[in-house]
Image (tube, rainbow, N blue to C red; front, side, top):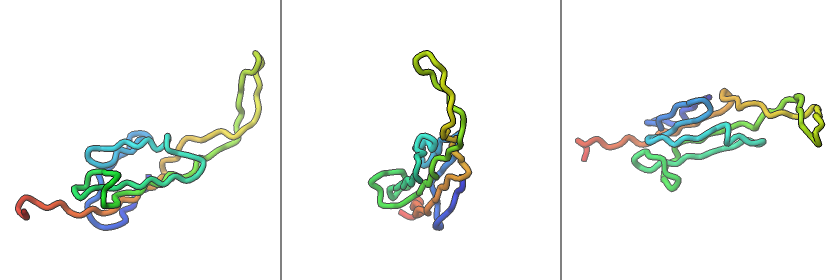
Length: 116
């Protein structure tokens, strides 16, 4: 996965487990392969002032860009009326994680206890 730091500041914790992106604290799990479509998918994540993921948050924290699904021609076999039929068709390829982009935006630093 291509990780880009778009602005300075602390960013959301993140790591990959297979095709699942774990992002934020506590982690929100996004299955990138399940979100893949025939067109590019862009997912925006927002955060609250404390840096927690919040769909209503005031801060843009990250953007995930999943490229369109890739296809190759391949042999497909189907059963129809007890007969096996084989033909050429487009076959979806697994998600290419190297083509996924995670853009991280800096969040404001949290105040320390001595600043209160």
